[in-house]
Amino acid sequence: MKRQKGWIVTFQPEGRTAEVMQGTSLLEAARKAGVVLTTRCGGKAGCLMCKVKVEDQSAAGIQPPGDAERRKLGSLLDEGVRLACQAAVRSNVTVHTPEDPLKAAVRRRLEAARRGDEDELW
Ligand code: FES
Image (tube, rainbow, N blue to C red):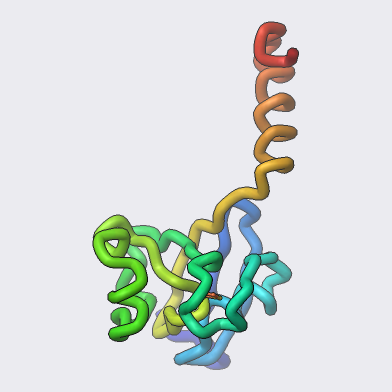
């Protein structure tokens, strides 16, 4: 559904959102949403550090990959992986970002504690 101002990009697992105009890159949308995506190439499809995964049902929410992105990602495109610096928004879309390794470790420990699973705590 098109909104009057723009499109909603949702970043999981944090659930943060940004409203952006058509053609905005996912990298710009992430910054607007306060989601940190590490980059080294300045958004030029050079470092591959901005990989995200687009949910199948919302793949239409992203413009098709260009030549540079196709060359860099190859078969990963078939798995829904996109370069946030190259992928442009064209409707509402949900994107999964890689979880920070430290946050992931903390989350796993908290989940183990909630389950009462002592073995996973240490
Ligand atoms: S920011 Fe380097 S490949 Fe996207």
